Amino acid sequence: MNYELREMLPHDEAKVLEIFKQGIDGGVATFDTLIPTAEAWNMEFLNDCRWVLENETNEVVGWCALRSVSKKECFKGVAEVSIYFDNNYQGKGLGSVLLKKMILDSESHGFWTLQANIFPENEASIKFHQKNGFRIVGTRKKIGKLNGEWKDLIMFEKRSEII
Image (cartoon, rainbow, N blue to C red):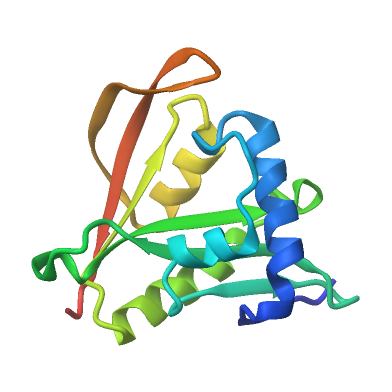
């Protein structure tokens, strides 16, 4: 099967949010429990470094985007990575295509550190990020509650080798 990697466009919003809902429903990808509106999603994520992967029928099957970790000027080159795939396309090695493109694009936009916060039980995401050059920085114990249960997060980062 052939896939096309391209910049995310406004008409992708519905599919992006549908895929995000699958992540919410899976229970190991995010603290979010409700799908945001397209407007809220767009306010949360940066306008740069948004990518989608389409299948042969031009259906978006995965997406990635960045969000700022702080509004402080000193952290302008640090962003948190979000990457999600339709359940039917997970585990096919497609995530690395998206993430590698995002890493290159983020560097061209001046980002020197990308980070990811992952639930310990999301073993596939942990292995995926490590395979793509992210290293464990530490574990944040009982950092938040999801459905009434305290959750830990493992924090990963990838430092740019060119910035």
